[in-house]
Image (tube, rainbow, N blue to C red; front, top):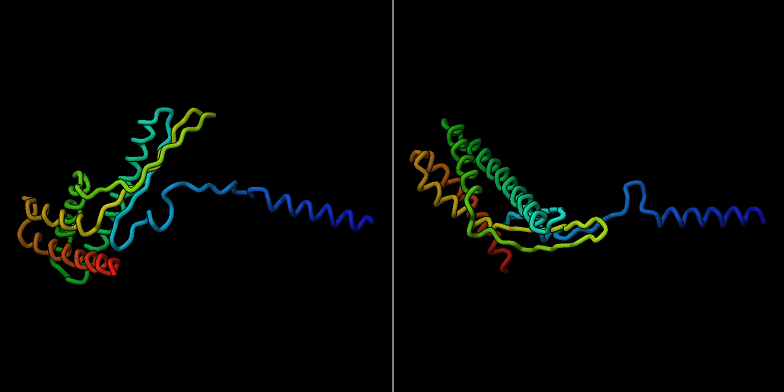
Length: 187
């Protein structure tokens, strides 16, 4: 009798432990998570979350966070692309070209891009805390952004002709990859 009671107590304890959220807490599912909201070979994507007692401030925070995430991805990707290209090309003025290219990337990201698209926005209101939570997701089509960068490189007076040629070559190679990714997705 005592062993069956002990067994029941153990079963109840295991059941309760399996139902509790665990040491890290309960898993929360937020909007705009998963593959559809991550950057890939066709799109740069960024998501943001903002919380405030005022809905417009919560939205502004989410907007800034999503755009900052996007800008960081673009900057990191373009730096890797430039470094890889310049490493392969063994360009004697590689550092100068890399600096100009990064300057161009920053300039482009500081410009309002025509192809920046909002792919989602959700707003929640918590009555207990009297706070709004806003989630926003943006994307930029890679080939449109690269074409814009190429146009900017052509009009940038701080880039000399040799640097412009190298930058355009880097952009053309990335455009080719992005266009191939678009064609693959259409099939």
